[in-house]
Amino acid sequence: QVHLVESGGGLVQPGGSLRLSCIGSGFTFGRFTMNWFRQAPGKERVMVASVASVGRTNYADSVKDRFTISRDDAKRAVHLQMNSLKPEDTAVYFCNARWSEYGYDYWGQGTQVTVSS
Image 1 (cartoon, rainbow, N blue to C red):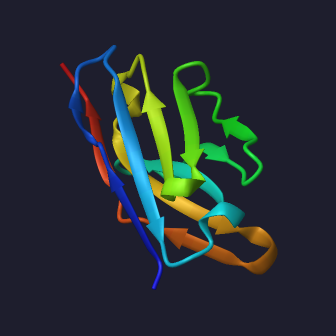
Image 2 (cartoon, rainbow, N blue to C red; image 1 turned 120 degrees about the vertical axis):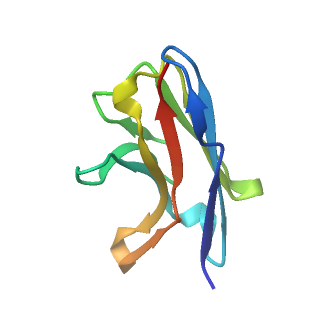
Image 3 (cartoon, rainbow, N blue to C red; image 1 turned 135 degrees about the horizontal axis):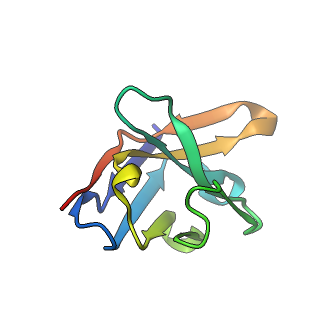
């Protein structure tokens, strides 16, 4: 059974930092592209950052130079370091594991990030 469990969300002031983590189980972690999505109230879920199985990373323009995604295949973990947070970063953040060639697409339950003074 596949599980993706996120942690690290919370309330932070503007300009602060948070580190999200996601631990995967039940699938061949190292073969999957790992992604972080977010969904703000009343808005669509959008991709924030991704890291491919070979380590190549990609970021949404809105978070470039502020967020860093990394993976540790030995620990079956993916992290999202978020710096210089802004109120518009407030959203539920979801961990996603995807192997498009085979149609595999797994989601975590999400973790709330709130940026507010």
